[in-house]
Image (cartoon, rainbow, N blue to C red):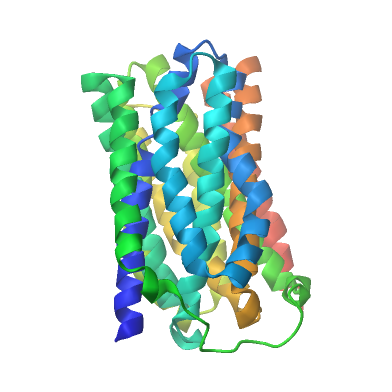
Length: 382
């Protein structure tokens, strides 16, 4: 019962925290342009928090194993609350980069500790289901944030979005503070014995880690460049937020059933199906670009992401010792952040020299290449 209540608290915190965080998705590209950034610089600014998270995730994951999950959860949510208050103070792109660095540090502290605690609290037989619930909560937050941020931006301008983001993140911080003792937890289930790094030698582990990396290329492209693509197509900020929300909505709705399926079916097949759908969806945003078509393909991308992510995380966790799950989830999340950061930056360069239709086509082709690589890894015998 204690574990169940703690898990539910984590699910609520994930939802609330990432609702506030994702307010920024349709806002930051336009805010960066307002401060004088060009298309390539916008891509770099949007990706900056992911670059920082990718660098800090593994150190913070190790700290969560040694200092306790609760300290990293509280520290990350504190930064989540403070960082949005600094956005209105930025007066040029370089200052905006500095704020994005702080926001990235917040994500690096929170993410591996939270998902490692979810795994700590569950048995291996229920791991996919628990990950499904947690990532569904996170995705629901990512669904609610962009459309809310888009509407707030349209109605009130930039600053109210930033202040609302801070207020919502503060709610998650309060929840963690009230329940902090429940998060001081030592893993009860011991997994496969071995060193902290033995698990990464398995081909299936590489497949599980690289799946979120390639999916992140597509989600980063949609989240960052749909607002610009929308301006080019005559789609307003609120509608751009709706497109991004559609992606996270369909992903969130599938996380729980996909997690249960990952506990019962071959995780390799689930990953292959999800990754194939994401490549198809983002690529189709190039030749088909009415509002209704973009919403449809965003929904399809979310379906693929929702199917693949719980299975890929569970596959990585299967090979990790209980004493290093913070590190394990940090590495897994790091791959996602690398995909988001590098993909967003690369697509910004594509947009700078070409157009937004080519951005989405290039993103789809990148995921398709990833699909071929991962499919090959999953066929290698251990």
